[in-house]
Image (cartoon, rainbow over all chains, first blue to last red; front, side, top):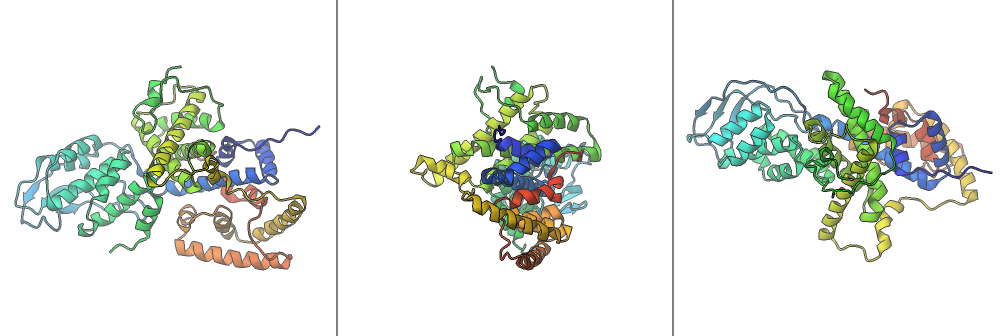
Length: 224
Length: 259
């Protein structure tokens, strides 16, 4: 009497693709798939998804770019120097540490204000914005989000608020809200390296909220 | 059975009613997920990154399996929809597992499997709702299953199987004549229909390189198959299973031995 046919269900296919099946199980499954179109198609779909997972691992959708638990770095308090009224076009000039930009992936952290931030504005910097940027420098995401939500600024400073708030939300796993903030940015008005980082972050937010095609399009479009 | 609090805590798309978990079959990925989470907690430095990568793949595969297993009952979806959902939900679960908001470790594997299935189901329901807002649902109830079944080619008859076996055997020999890199890139494109971006990401090649390698591999395979009396390199039934079994990609996708 022949053995009953054992078709490959989705869990079995996942087990095979993950390499969790024993050699005998694997051999039996593949032998069956060679003669069962439905099971082969299913296995193929899972193998394809495995490639997608592997590709996402190295890019914005993967976990290596989500939240990396690292000890907060202590920085000296930001020194804010009021200067001229160019806030309309460009928000800030950051004397930065090393940019952490990587092509095709959202920056783990945006280029941060180093030990000194100079704002091009004659007006006093909004206290909540300052607190939020300081918290971001310390990698304190909840405090960043709370403070930047409360900040009431305009012009270039508002662009900075949206960018850092969007990125903090993205890094804390709230891609949906992050997407809203990042979409509201005027990317072309941002100075480098924030423009490139904002593009990468927006692409990451789109990818994590299921808008892969838009993300692909943004990532493949040449930056102006 | 009440819902374990740690499993339901503040997870998007996981508004599971108390008592919603039935005892479900325990798939191998559920055991592996729990082991991976335990290992991740005690890992540091480079080791931690390896465990995170392993957990990511396990979550993605588990969610994809759960999504695909339920998709036909909930919404018309494409393979890309399912992959997108698997990536989105995996990211969310990863972030919450690392933040300690999601802690399945104290729970039995069948609860973990049930939870993952519920996350997948809720993701599908959300997708269906969005789609309904964007376009009307299908008139025919059977249309819900079309997206999963329409990728299954027509079943071949006995004579077709004989031809297919001969074809697959020739294709296997020709594919073996390619260099390992060409073989992998061609396999990703021709058998798995992956985009250039994805292939470039997993092979560490540039997109332009990928396209060139695929083109040259296709030309080489076409010539090789022609000498064996076949004038096509189309991946016919049986070819994927045969080639996948030998592909180095199979080992690359495996989570075993990574961490």
